[in-house]
Image (cartoon, rainbow, N blue to C red; front, side, top):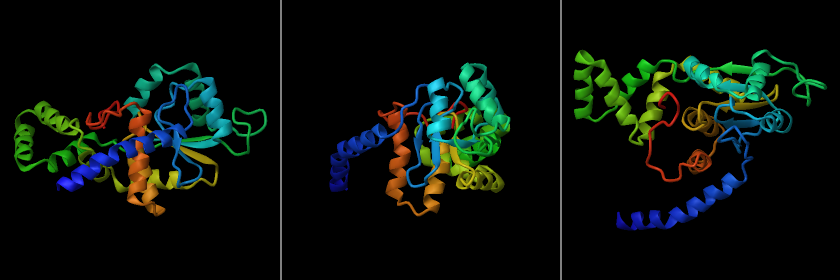
Length: 257
């Protein structure tokens, strides 16, 4: 009770400093937010979207981090919006991955061999399914309210569900996300990210926090990381995205979650 609360408050400065130290160890890119390695999985990196990449970012990703495979967890509409405002370098970088550009001397990626690859695996492809899963997990009164709105006013139904997600209930978002995406989609995302025989892999969504965070957490769990380590890795996003105040929106990504 009170003792646990006091202990939690006393640990907050320590945890904050620990997160700042971990964040300082991450490579800071110019136009790509929230970039960092998944430390317990050599060759796996995570970040926000790549459309705003600069020349320095592209050089680092290709020749220092040696990223050879990208796993993009966004939906088509998100990608289209991001590319409409992308930097020329960002567009060129993504075009190289989309076209399977060769790797080697005098190529866009000069180290090693093989080709660049990009896979789109939308974890929120079934938005209606996600909203249904969220509604099913609401408290009884809210769940009944949502059921009523579903029969008479779908806009109010969806607003109620999005409001629930926007109140910082990450557990509600993540459990609904895992339940709503087809198992084959999760299997594809996990298997591509886990297979780094062709080179290092970068997983990303819009901000590299929620969808990317869940996928990274599942991969960390699979290799035996302790829950505390998984939580610490996830919490780094708040520092790197400047969300240290906490308590804010549920998803924070351009589609909502």
